[in-house]
Structures are given as C-alpha cells and as structure tokens.
Image (cartoon, rainbow, N blue to C red; front, side, top):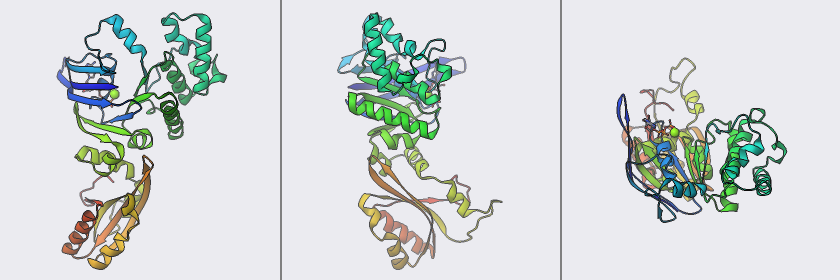
Length: 348
Ligand SMILES: Nc1ncnc2c1ncn2[C@@H]1O[C@H](COP(=O)(O)OP(=O)(O)OP(=O)(O)O)[C@@H](O)[C@H]1O
Ligand SMILES: [Mg+2]
C-alpha cells in the first residue's frame, strides 16, 4: 500500500545542516493503522509529509500501491494526492468558511457540480456525526468537532489512505478517545489505511496494529504493536513503553512530600507480565525460594491490542544475592524486570 525505501532528507538552515531523515524504510499494508512515535524533532512530520510528497526526499523511493510517485510531475501528483487525505494537530480549517464550505473545499477544487457537492458533504458530515453543524463556523465548534470537520474534509475525495499528524495532541483525553474511535470506525467500515503520528503510547495502544519508533531521523524499531510493547529492543522504545505504565502514585508511595525516602531498604523494580504469565504465582515463589521480602508499591493492567499487560512496581528487600536471584528467576519466566534507581532521582 505505502512503501518507503531508503528515504533521506537534509534541511540546510542558517544554523547548519539538519538530517531529518536517514535511510528510512517503512511498509504500510492495506488496512493497517500504523503508528509512528518519537520525541520532538525525531523526523515524524518530515516522514509523513514524504508520503504525499509535500516534502520531497533527497533520495529514496515512495511507492503507493506499487506506483513510484517520486518521479511524477505536478499534474499526476495532484491526482495521486486525491487518494491520500491528511489531518493535523491544529485542524487547519478555513476560519471564515462554514463547516459545509470547509468540507466542500476539495470537491469544489475538483470541479464537482453543486448537486454532487451537496450530497457528498451531507454524507461526510453524517459519517463524522456533525450533521447539525452544517452552517456553523469553526470558531463556534469545540476542538473535537473541528477535528471531525477536518476528517470529513480529508475524506471528501474518498481517499484510501489517511495521514494523521498529531491529530489528537491538542485534545483532552475524552475527546481524544472519541476521535480515535472515529478513526477506528473509518478504518473498519471504509477499509481506510491510516498512518498516524503521535507522541502518546496510549494512542498507539488503543488503535495501532503496527508501530515504528523514530529517533534522530532513523527508525530504530518497528513491527507488531503487542510485540513492540512486550519485547522492546531499544532503550528509546523501552522508555516509550514504560511511559504507559508510569504513575505519580509510585513516587508518592516512595517519598514523603519533602522528598525524603519513606523506605530505607530494598531495591525498586518495575515488572511487566504478559498474557498467561500474569496469573502464575511468581511473586509468592520469589519470596519463598529466594528468601526476599516483596512489597507491592503500585500495579495496573493495560490492554494492548485487546491483550493484557500487567505492570507491578515492587520493592524487594533481602540479601543482594537473593534479590539478584529473584530477578533472574522473573526474567527466566519471561517477565520484564527493570531496576529503578531511587537514589539517583530517576523520573518515575
Ligand atoms: N522546513 C524545514 N526547514 C529546516 N529544518 C526543518 C524543516 N522541517 C523540519 N526541520 C527539522 O528537521 C527535524 C525533524 O523535524 P520534524 O518536524 O520532522 O520532527 P517531528 O518528529 O515531527 O517533531 P515534533 O514532534 O516536534 O512535531 C527537526 O530538527 C526540524 O527542526
Ligand atoms: Mg511533527
């Protein structure tokens, strides 16, 4: 569906050269909701803009359904772009046009007649549940409603691909959830393939079947979402995954309000349990077989692609060798155990 091979892009700025993309390859299959995560400046927007060639890569190949589009002229490219919708963090609506006119914009540009436009805009507003806002102006809408208008506009020409650059980043959690549900519905009902940039693993967890992690212009890891959550290969992926399970409560349990530690002894670990492993009595065995004391500080379960991942913060006390033995035992059992340096002031 979308195949990017060996993309490079360097920006030449007054401050010097910025390698925004370094040999980036990515394959998105039909029907995927493919997430791209990474910190600010990683190259996510540059990457997604290369898909419809809003950004021209210095080298590399961009194929849509097998068509190499980097060689296309403007006219062919305009046609190709009709098949690729795009939405943004700040919606990019026309402020002095009504909802109807915003959604009609691409249809007018494509010189559809009045009847066709009215019919299509009506369908689209129904699809995004905004039929009652046809003649409202963007300033009269909530953030979530504005994004729905933007989605309707992006779908006007019936694209097969939707590019989403941080489309939920300006929205509160509840509105984010409703927009994600809408994207999922469009994916399932229209067979829309979605490439979605986000910095929130919670968004990835909810809707993406595949995900790529970017760092400094490169893709460091990519593949099945559940596998990436449970078997992260790189430090940066681990950091993103852990962000999903991190909780302020852990800090509050471990430290007094003035920052003094409540516990003088023991080492803090974060344990991640996957699938069947979650129900075995591992903690009981580690206490018994390794003569350790284990206090549970904080626990939760997150569903990733409909499968559970359990997270436990535990304080383990005992002889050093016994603590190490217990941790090795956890790891042998397929539990991911990461030590957290409580004295070093690691952010929890
Ligand atoms: N038009 C441009 N001119 C010069 N430098 C650019 C341009 N666009 C992007 N860059 C630089 O390329 C790098 C990647 O930028 P990009 O916008 O792709 O990052 P991003 O991952 O989308 O970040 P964010 O999460 O902040 O949106 C950054 O260092 C950025 O400053
Ligand atoms: Mg960006």
